[in-house]
Image (cartoon, rainbow, N blue to C red; front, side):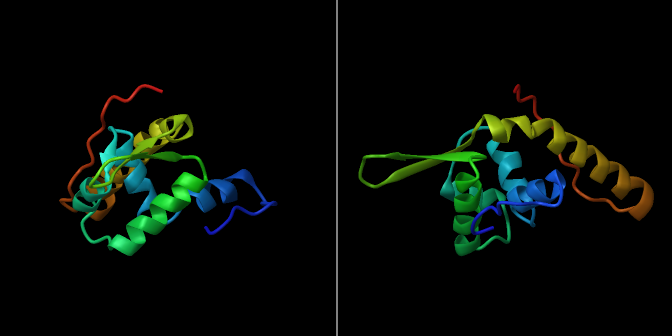
Length: 122
């Protein structure tokens, strides 16, 4: 998502443009639990490259789903957190988590690591 389009065929297309892909939902899931630094995000998102994490964070910031705060110090310190728009997605993320847990248990019969819900108020 380099830039949001001016027209979408439906609002779901807009949502997928903003948070679609492998990493954005996971980034948002972790940031809705609290403010994190780049290195912390990279550690919890096993398999993501530094380049991909940077790109995904920039796109979420551009869409105003997360915010980036830079501290004027040496060495530089940058923190990421959810905006109100990002926090408003938390109930949807919880529903996706529940669906994944149920699908995994009942359809796939897999022993996947269940996502755990945190209480984040909007």
